[in-house]
Image 1 (tube, rainbow, N blue to C red):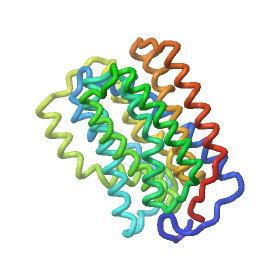
Image 2: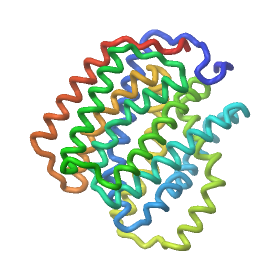
Image 3: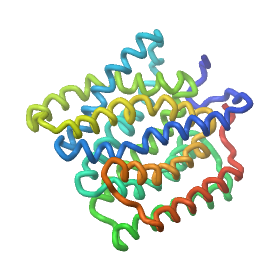
Image 4: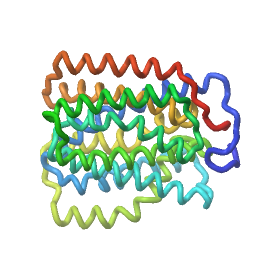
Length: 305
């Protein structure tokens, strides 16, 4: 285990880029069901409760994993970074996206969140000293423009009020992803999300208890199914692959596979919520896949790890 600070020098092994991409894609596939399952949950459960509640519940298997693997406590200097991760992917994104899902459907949310890869790359450049090439930024910007055009088309040419919450969710997730990737290089992806969950649980538990008292927990099985998924997979297991992938392949490169998440989510929304994406949706999907493929061939000057 390296003793360097997050993002500090440690040269990557051959094949890390490819393995990082595969792990990133696995994480994205897991996260692609988050919005459809959140839509199921918010029908009966309070959306503000869902954000911290899924974190507190996910802290239980996280604590079990840490105990089973006998993971050492994170060094004191990593605690501020873990707090950033918690604020971004444990509190910020889940709460903002859950509230937004009360007002827009999963398909709309998916296309707005399509700008997340670009936001993550920006956060990586800011926090991790990555220096993507101009061609990289051109392709990434084009990909974001495609999904933004799709979002505007779906909204009748103008953004909806819930889009502001989704933008907050994007910013929170991007910073949490970038910071988590830096920590993962030192303690590993699973330990990063597990420690963030365990350390934030004592702070969030009283909030969950208060909201439970106010709103109650009466809900249909479908709502609990949605909550169970976003707790176990979106908040816990998905990050095992995602943070490891970002750490191995580089934040700016691996984050671009998130462009595919928009269209994965559309497919899952059709299965879960009965939505029917039309031919134009799949045309946008083909365009995004082409952009991701082109972006993969550009140069990225990542920090030497």
